Structures are given as structure tokens and as C-alpha cells.
Length: 620
Image (cartoon, rainbow, N blue to C red; front, side, top):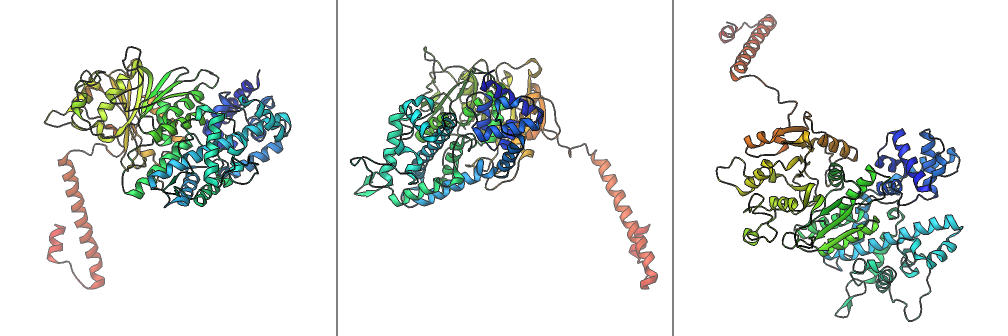
């Protein structure tokens, strides 16, 4: 048995014995979910300290022979490591809050130097460079454990760059950039200040790693305009110092999945708040992405696509869940994504690199120019599609009246209102004969036009989907989850090959009761995501949460598919007819009059008064 196979077996056994999810195991180990996911998938190996903790948990779980995949240290010492790590979880695994604070501190360091919307152009490449450097240090530490010391490990890595994910020459390492380590620059190359140093550093990274061209070297930190630097070197030094804080380490075991996407989301929101405008882009909250992935349950080798991929967070989560469902498989998903915005496209590339995932990315307007096509020029079909396109996007019917891909005319018609169902028509065009999809849209998309006396195009398209039994279900999300809006959204699930038990049925799940209040945004707790996905996939009625309706019921309701309309509430029992209620009300009123009269009669000897004529008449 190889080391990676033994490690996979040990971690799975620990989770089974202790009844832990991968997230819970990650918390016990003091690492991120993505790290445990990689370990179980055999894609990376834990370092010495982590092996000690794994050994301690294996002992706690009562596993024999677990030392083969862990550390040989005594259980007592390992248990102490476990206690120590768990006691510092907030440092070892940054949550969203410390990440946001780091970014805001960094943004404040250069406020006034650039327009708010330009902050991210400088901060994200720096964040990515810090991540690459911290990962480089982690991998050198791993080599040092094998070869004896750091100097030897550095020499070996310099001779064989394939031992590392990305090789960083000395001037590009964060210790040198921050001034905490020395470096002897050649006289002709020595930078005048931190701005020049950073520009040289990112160019050195690209020189050693050509695949990062256009990803990390997107800005010149030493750029000048009219004889003045765009960003003052002293301000840049402040950003570097902020990123150098030990609380904000970004190594292999330090950050949650899609941390760059979270950073991008936060910066977009802050810029929108500062300018009083909408950022115009959506980042799907992490828990919503995982919910979609668990509902899709991707299988090894499946072709998965996101036509509005943003930072590629939904694709990343599909692969993470696929590994969790089948950790022994070495066959990755085939991931493709298209994105219009240049900044989001670069972040998507960074995300793929950070997660060691192959994601084929293309830039362009998906609705007008979908890039993923067959050799014959048709839209390529996929097993799984996940997306969070722009909600309520204005839609120009004349542009698509003669759609070259025939996505609208043949799928319910051309909408004249919002673009939500146009996105679902495109989604359907992207699915193969057994494909399934999960798409996040505005809540109104499942009700608009129902009950209208006039023919409504959105309602008619929704009817077309329902009549063909393409809608597997709708999930109502809690409000105030998304950074750009306080409105709730829905996940619409499509399936072109429903199992027999779900044919001509639609599962409606109301997840709003599972929300936790937060500042500034609400959230769905991690331990709720899997139960919600399981409830949806099971497809059985659950009071206050799940309703299952037939396509005939949907037709009778004029194709209104809002879960809040259908999910039965505990307090909605039949209260009886109106006549019975009025009779009960009269009886209660009569009893109240009788009690008042009795009380006055009993107290009159004490206060020297007798019941009035009105009181006597009430008694009668």
C-alpha cells in the first residue's frame, strides 16, 4: 500500500469512526476543507505537524496501524498538538472576517492613491503573489523534512522545479519582498523602491512559470503618469506590511476554498458602497455553491460548465465535492467556464491554479458569443451546468430573434422582459441528453406573469419547461445572503433525465428557515448544507421545508413555482368555517360578561356599591 493510499484510508476511517464530515475533520486538524479534500484525494501530503494530529485522531478513533499514514510520535504528544491547534483555530484557518479585515487594512493603505474601483487591480495580484510565496515555503519545508534542512531543500528545488507547484526565484519570495530576508541584487537590476521590486518580482514569477502570464503580471506597480507614481511606494510598503501579518498566512493549510473569490467579492462590495453604485457582478456565497455542488453530485470524469463563471468558485466546489464523494478516484472533472469581465477572468485563473485544478477558461459574452462549441459550430453539451448569471438582466428581443444557436424560439419563445428565463434557455442548450443543472436567479423568476390576464412571455417559457418535465425543483434561499442585494434568490434545478420516482414532479424546498443572522450578511451554516441537499434529493414532503407537487398542480397554479406558496407550515392547520368561529367568539364574549358581573357582585359589599342596571342586564 502506497503512502497516499494509506493516508486516504486512514482519513476516511477516522471520519467514519468519529462521524465527521470533511469540514469537521478539517477543523479538528486545524487546516482548511480544501486541504483535507486534497489529502483524501491523494493530491498532496500532510507535513510533519499535521501527521502528528492525524495520528492522534486515529488513536482516538481506535484505529490500528494508522501510524503508517501518520507520524510515529507518541499519542500523548500528538494529542497535545491537537489541543494546541484547536485552541488556535482562528489563527490557523482564517475565516471570512480576518480576510476582510486584511483586505480593508490594505485598501486603506492606498486610499486616495487610486480610484476605489482600481484597488482590486493592485490588491489581488499582490494577494496571489503572497499565496504563491507561502505555498512555496510550505513545499520547501516538506522537502526539508525529506532532505534534512532548508538550504538543501532550496538547492534541490532550484535544480528540479518540477518538485514544486510553482518555483519562485529569491527576489519574488515574500520574505525578500517584505524585507525580512536579504537578497543581493545585481547592481544594474537593483530596484529603487518597493514598486519596482514588486514589478520585477511578478515578472520573475512569470519567467519561471509561463502559465501565469496575464494572471499575475496584469499591473505595473511602478507605473508613472506625468512624472508621478500611480501609487506612492510608501503606500505600497504599507500594503506589503499588512499582508505580512502572521495572522494572514495563505499557505496550503491556511485558507478556505475559494478564498480569492471571497476576497474579490468583498472588494467588489466595498467599492460599490464607496461609489454608491452597484458593482454589477455577483459572487455566489460559499455555502450556496456547496449546496449546488452537493445537489449535482458530480461523478469522476463528468463534463461540467459554468457560462458565467466569475471567479470560478462554483466549478472549484464541484471538483471538491466530487473528490469527497469518491476520494479514491484519480479522474478529475472536465471543467470549463466563460466569463466576460477581465478582472473576474484573471481571478478564475488564479483560483484554478491555487486549487491545482485544470479549468479551461474563455472570455466573452456568453449570450451573444458562447465560446464552447462543437466542431460543427453548435453549443457544446455538458453533463452538469452550474451558474449564477446576472439577475433581471435587460434583454433585447430583437438581438435574439434570429439566434444562430436557436436557443429561444424552440424553447418557449423569446422573452420581452427580464433575462432570467433566457439564461435558463441557454442552460438547457448547454446540457446533453442526460444533463442536469443548478442556476441561481432572482426569486421573481418563478412567479412573474402567473395569474396575469395578459399573455406573459416569462410565464409562457416557464410553462414550456414545466410541460416538458424539465424542472426538477426550486430552492428558495434566505434573504440578505448576496453582497450586491438584500433580496433572496432561488436555485432552479433542471434535469433532462429524471429518475422514475421524480417524473412529472417538482420538489420545492424553502431554505429560509435555516438562515443564521450575520453582519453585514446572513449565512447558511456549513453543517446545514448537506442536510438541505439530502432533503432535496430525497424528494419527500417535510413540514415547513419541502413540498412535492405534480406538474398538473403547477399547471393549475398557472405555473407559479415559489416554494413559499407550496411548503406546508405547522401553523396553517384548518381553523374551521366562519360560522363556527363566530359562534365561539360569541360564547367567549358571554363568558367574559358573566365573569365581570360576578366579580362586581362579590366586591360590592367591600366597596359599598351594588351592580348597576347595565351590569344586571349583562348578567341576564
